[in-house]
Length: 99
Image 1 (cartoon, helix red, strand yellow):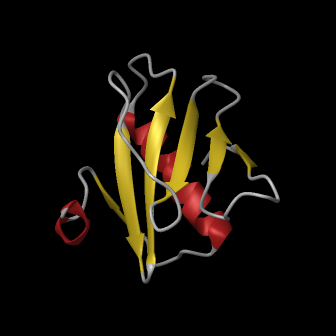
Image 2: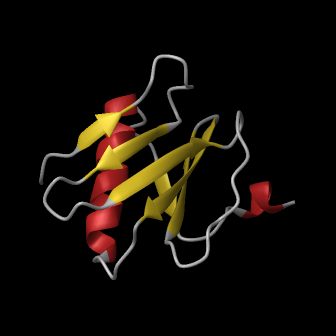
Image 3: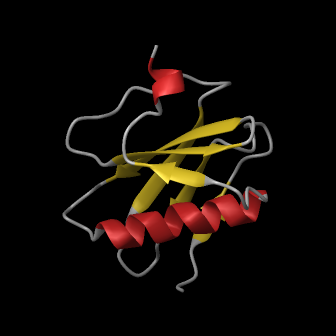
C-alpha cells in the first residue's frame, strides 16, 4: 500500500482533514458529520464511513477519473491513522443518517 500524507490542523476536529496522494496529486477531504456540515460537490466522488459513534464523509478534490480503489485505499489509511479499525466504508450516506 502506498504512503499518503495526512494533514489535520490542531484547531480542527480529528475527523476533519485532508489526505494527499503525492503520486497522483489527488486530495480527499474528510468531514466529521457530527461536528460539521457536508454537501457533496458536483463532479467529485464521495464516500461515507461509520465506525462506532464516528461518522465521516470523504470527498475528492480535483477528481479526474482516478481509480476508485485509490480513493478507498486513501480513506482506509486515514481511518487506521485515526484508530477507527472497525470502520465500514459506504458509497452512499447510511440510512440512519439520511433523515
